[in-house]
Image 1 (cartoon, helix red, strand yellow):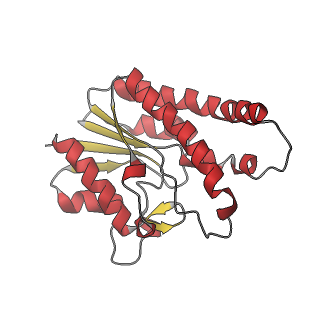
Image 2: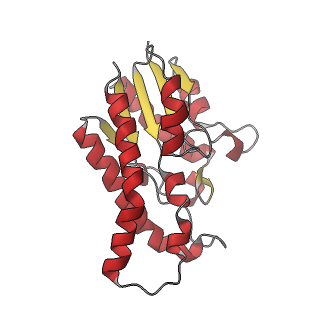
Length: 203
């Protein structure tokens, strides 16, 4: 019997974003299998919250740990993408790397901790969202892809360092209907994600 702990943010804790009668990611997982799923993920949490709260709630019963975190860390730096400062390309990239440095450090701390558990670990990348046409996000829709790519490079690199699996969410959330709003998973997107998680657990 698999015991799966789900850590992270609203990519997993998306119940408030789906319509009545629709399923969250955790509910999809439970609906499609007889495994036990413990949800530690909390809507709005960042890498800081995972370190301060979620890791302490892990149980040694877990056979599998799934982590989906980082998107809210990027949202916290949205002002960087909306800045009107005139900078060179080198200066912009240096600032971006500087912004991501503490996120990278916290992310590695989380994965190092998870890798020391007697369980399998799956890291989820950050998807790009459905930002085009949204009044708040559309002006940074393309620029945000670069920041997402830089964060996902950290996730892939960390996964390789600690020899754990990585699930590429950009290959799963590919259509507007996969999102309940510009940045949250819909019933359909959550089902696609849960299918991939279960494939990993069954493997």
